Length: 313
Ligand code: VAH
Image (cartoon, rainbow, N blue to C red; front, side):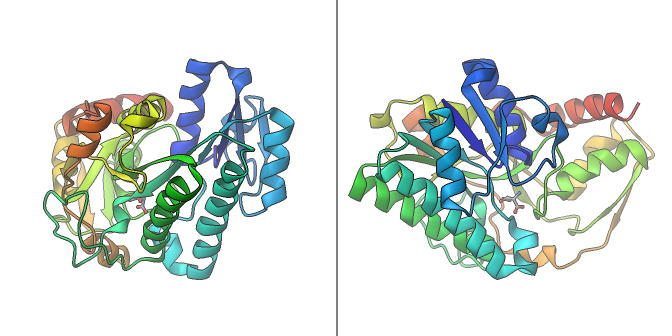
């Protein structure tokens, strides 16, 4: 049985749907700290789990006979800068609980998401390599960098089968993201439909690595389905699809909504974005477990606007 912790979140909610397609509804337990995503909470096989509470996690695992955990709960980069200690506590305690449950053989496998946020201003920004300088300047990035160190340690020391991906910004339409710096790339599509205008909190030339949700979910399923011997990196794999700027997204939207208007009003999230790479070298993921992305910016804009037009009808 599979348990998704943080199933109400942007990735967790879509991971829940996808894994239930593959494994059957009854074999995928969704959980979160509250009922913030009613579609997930009301779909059944849902539990309230506090990821920071070891017994809350363990009880759910034992009740449902879980052997694989996807730990998708975390406080993201922008919110983390407002609540640094809470971000550290949530992101780290939840990881330790799940790694220790695997170390004690209560569960067999773990997926834990890292992020391009592990890189910082001293990291080469173009085609950032898998192995390079990493001096993250956000609490979120620090938790992801040190989390990667612990994942590799638990694999080497206790043979814990934990697998991880450094996600770029992720674009999706089903569930809004919460508190990320790349959230602009989701909000812009919603506002394009509802307001034909968007006030962007990043400068127009802020280039960031991005990926459509369907690619991110495919990568997550692929790395978890790979043979353990193929997973040569047990910290976290670089993963890439495309990179774009707010201006490029706006221009791709204007193909469909010619009078769409962008206003640029950078805020504190600009400093976070400036500390991150512009593009990522994911050659190890492509080599070790045959990763390749599908969605281009044009594909994403077409899909986002089509789906959101329906949603806002
Ligand atoms: C964030 N969406 O913005 C997350 C992600 C690379 C960005 O980690 O914090």
